[in-house]
Structures are given as C-alpha cells and as structure tokens.
Length: 464
Image 1 (cartoon, rainbow, N blue to C red):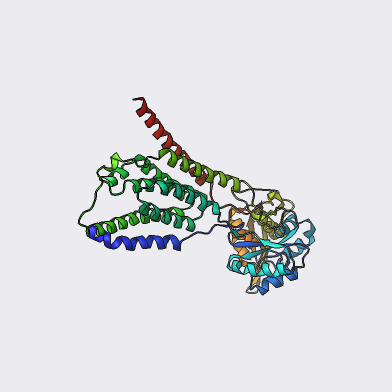
Image 2 (image 1 turned 120 degrees about the vertical axis):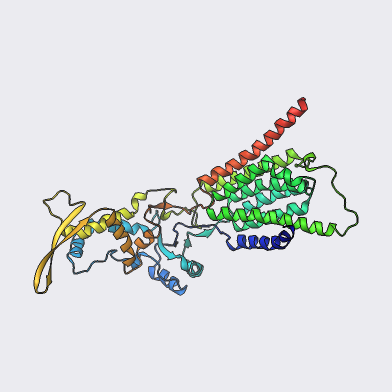
C-alpha cells in the first residue's frame, strides 16, 4: 500500500491541480444570462451604432429598430385588423419600448448575444473613436482585496510556522484555488483553513502528529465550516474545494515521502524528543496568530459588505445607469414600467380572441369558443375553436416565442426562464448569496470561539 501511494500520489496531485485550473471561474457582472447590454447615448443615430456592430461581426442583436409585431398572425387576418384599430390603446406595445432605454431614458440599449461578447470591445472602440458615449453592462469583477487579505494572513502565519516548506507549499495551492475562484466566501474559508495547515507545520513528523490532528476538534470544525462555505457559493465551487483539500493532503504526503527518501541516505537522522501532544500547535504565538486571523477575516467581510451593499454603476459616467434586467431576488426598482411575460400572455390572448368574444357572455376574459367553417370534399363543415386562458395557453405562447421571425425582446425575456421578472437594476454581484454571507460570518464566529476557548483554558490554568 505504501508503495502504491508513492506512485499514484503525484499523479493524483497533478490531476487535482489541473482540475482546479481547468474549471476556473471568472466572476462577471451580467444583467442577463444570455445577453450583454450595450448602451449608447440616445441622440446618436441608430445607423451609426448598427454599422459599428456589423463592422465588429456582431449579428442577431436585439434593438428597437429591428422590432416588429411579436405574434405570428397574417396582415390579412381579422385579428390583425382588430389590433390595428385598437393600437393606440394597446398598453403592452407601448410599454415594451422601455426595454430599449435605461431608466432615465438617456441611453438607447442593444442586447448582444453571449456568442458575440468578445466582439463588443471592437464595437465600443469604434463608437468611442467617433466620440460616442457608450458602455456595456458585463465586466470582470475580480477584487484585488481578496488576494491581499489572504496573502496578509498567510504572511503572518509563515513567520511563526516551524516547517515553512509544508506551510508555504500548501499556501500556494490555496492561492491557486483563490485565483481560479475569486470570491469573498472562498477567501474567508481559505483564511480559516490556514489554521489547520499552520498546526501541521508546527508538529510535522513528531510522534503521533497525524493522530493528534485527526482527533483535534478545532481542525474538524474548521474543515467542516470551510467545506460548507464553498458549497454555499455553488456545487461546482464546493467540489473543486474538495479537490483542493485532496491536493493539499497529497502535497504533504509527497513531501513526507521525499524527506523520508533523503533521510535514509544519512547515517544519523535527528528525531524530535517531544511528541505532538507536548508541543504548542500555535508555536507559542496564540494571541498574535488568532488576533491576526480574526482581524483579517473581519476586514475581508467588512470590505465585502461595503462594496456589495451599493448598487453598482454600470457606466463610466458620473451618473448611475439602471438598465432593464431580470430582478428576481435582486434590487427591484419601478418594475411597473416594464412589461412582464404575464403581460405578453394577456396581450396575445386579447389579439387572438377579441374578434370572437361574445358580448352576451360574462366569462369572455378567460374562455372563448366560436365556430369556423371549412370546405371538405365539396361540403362546408363547422368546427369549434376553443381558447382558454390557462397555464397550457401560457406555456404554448412561451414556446411560440422562438417561432418569431425576428430578434424580439420577448426572446431576451424568455432566455431568463418562465419566472422572469423585469425591472431596473445595476450590475449584479455574484460574489455571494445569502447562505454564503451567513457562512462567512460563521467562519469569523468560529475563529472567535477558538480564541476565547483558548483564553478561558489558559485563565483556568493560571488560577490553579
């Protein structure tokens, strides 16, 4: 078994590192999952903007000038005629235009599919050369504070660690993971994870050090909390964090095998007299180590709240720009100005049923039945057409959006799913959700609990 570990541990270690790098996550603030929003000052000619988009090889974009009637009906049909007669009273047609302007109506909006995101920089460059104020809602949001906090915590513990090779090697793996998953909850979880690694470095290869660490309650709690903290971000981040833990363990095993290999070549090898239980896992620097970790963790959480509690400005200009977005579980601001999918269902229902509603029935708002006459085999036969405003009707309308013969704003709305809720918002913060925020605070509480527990034990010893 020992032989197989020596062979497969380096391979498994490299596999874990490659896995972490391959599945790295770059946080990008986006208002729409499948679209980026280009905003251009509204007094600029639409042709100028579209020429810039075409020059940048951007296609299938959604803008106000390429909108048509978002329903598949013939212009010769009675449904279309009735719609035209009541067009001025149609609330949906008037309000859907709001999706093509920001809340202040100072900018015109263009929805660019994700497949052309890389081309957007070229379009913005062309527009900027023509002195046109413009911007895009999506941008990378990696904060350098994340790395600053982690490096500060690692630097403090490095000074007092006994085996700096083990500690710094493990820190490098954590830093690599943070680079691949730059989120505040990840940073906090990695900072508290430094503590068990610090313990390992201080009792490395002492008699019974493995058993002592495995049975240490603080190590178990920290590992459990850090794992949950990463899973609170996403399943992917949690699984990659498990790969990180495995890579750290494998790194320590490989280091142990390498040290053991060279020690066998020496005639005399010094051994530690004191066992792991007899040595301070804090290297007799408990107050400095714990105070530093608590302070750094507190600062990281404070910076997170300071930067995330503000609505992001998606513009380079001085005034904030709020753009139409799916505001589900986010800031909602005057969503009444924007039409919802429910409004679209109701609009389609009215167009299809208005010509056939009976003035003598009271349930015409939800149920319409009327005859149609068709010629078959030289005979005219009657068929009954029934419309019911129910979930089945809504699902059919939702599915039929894909059949529209142009790039409609309804396709943008559909891309968000059936629970779409339109409103105005700034760029979304994907650094954390409510659960991960709670876990960050819990990480700080765990550090405080460990510190106060140690202080209480030391006070009891002094009294005795």
